[in-house]
Amino acid sequence: MTGSLNLPNGNTLWLEEAPKGLRLQPVLGGARLELSLRTWANQATPQTSLLLSATLLVGQNPSHDLQELALVSIQQAVNVTVAPNQTVFVGHVSGQALLEAEELRAGGALWLVLRGLRGISVGGDPVGFELSSGGDLAVEVLSEQWSTQMEKVSSASYIDVMVPVTDDPELQKAAGRLRTARSYIRDGIFNAVAAELRQALDAVRVAYDTRKQAPAIRDKKSRDRSVLERWMLEVEDTYSHLSAFIHDDEEAIAGATLDRAQAVELVANVAGKVHRLAADRRAQLI
Image (cartoon, rainbow, N blue to C red; front, side, top):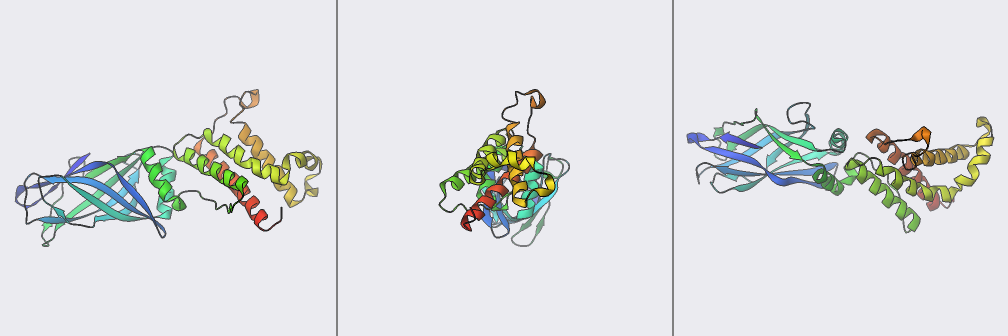
């Protein structure tokens, strides 16, 4: 989309989204956000340069249900020229805001909307603002682009369970499966999550021998089961749950599909179990 800013003497500064203009960089407590636009004017005025700022909103629709994401401004004044310039708006996005934006996206695209765009000449004279599309300048960020940028700041993403893998090849492989499952959620490919998580859980099942132990544990009354035994049953039940989305040829589970909420729940579940295995091995408990 394209917007415009009214300048003195009847001149106009035009603003237009640039291809793949979003960049995220990890910083303490969140991410540095950069949003690139192209700017040019009807007439060149060499003595005029501008500082711009705005509130950046985010949502699934550019016209309603938008949430404030960050305050943004340009770091270098814009020269008013006929030739296109690259203008970069910069702001800080908190980890919590990234978490909420990722949940809001639900595996799809997002809209970033510059609202309340303000321009001030370097000399201090105020300039008016006018956009052709209802007062906002909207930029669509496709799913693939957002996912790529989020990978750069994954410590601020909506789910991260730290797995101390050290040099254990089994744990390294399981952690890799978890990362792949998380990327599938970001891309909206929810059913593919099940196979990755089930394979990640294999390391846990082998280490605690849950498949062999489970039948004898189930024969016990609930009150006679230890905490570890109850947890081992949970491991086997999670494995069975994941299998429903892989082997869906039985009548009771025919056509079973994962939605985003279930996929997020299962990633957290399996990540926690892999974390426990890593911690127990580090403490030489297993």
